[in-house]
Amino acid sequence: MQPLRRDSKPVDLSRKTYVTPFKLILFTLLALFFAAIVLWKRARRPLVVCMIALFWLLAAGWLTAPLLALVQARPQSAATTTFAPRTAIILLGGGTVYDDDNVLVPPRDVMTRIKVSAASYAACKQTAITCQVIVSGGNPQRHDATEADTYLPYLLRERVPRADIVLENTSLTTYENARNVAAILGHSRYDALILVTSAYQMRRALLDFHRFGVAPQPLISSARHTRLGVLPRYGNLVNAEIALHEIVGIAQFHVYRAIGWF
Image (cartoon, rainbow, N blue to C red; front, side, top):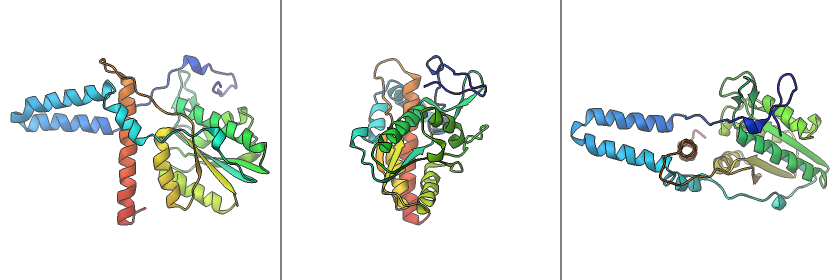
């Protein structure tokens, strides 16, 4: 599928490269190493060795691979998805990016989520009376449009009717995705719920949805893979950042639940 431009002319996605930017975890870890090296002069050499070894293990994939395996849920085949007379397919947002023409588009991971959601909708319509796609995603990156509004034209192009699409465009986190979608579900009666997102996000997303009494069937759209080797790869660092972000998020969920914040 090709992304939609504002002038409705198609853009060849295969010629574009969207790279997930670093967040704060690896940068913070690197900053802590440098601070420790400056403060502890006697331990400077072993700290430098540890820093180089750690980031090489992440960049070469040897440490990133088990981190990804820890957070990524096992893929579920669409053939195992159970539809009911009234089915809702929940599509979780995963950000927006600007392409080379400064057009706001879904990232590659989200493009796959959109396709899987549309395919699930088409299968649902063959057996169910009512099928709807709930798109959840606000504007945490403060771009020109929310995630839900940006994804809408792509769902329409995948032949999901506008009447069967519900937009939830205020969520800024996965926890808010679950909370706001749960509120939407509370106003409608569904017999089956299907949650579509990437493998790395599914474990944390299910924790959040279960917190609000929602137990959807997980439908993984894609999984991330590590390339092992000797030379460092930027993609492995991106995967490490994503995995660490999810690990911190899962730990945060359990801590907040224990102290009553979630």
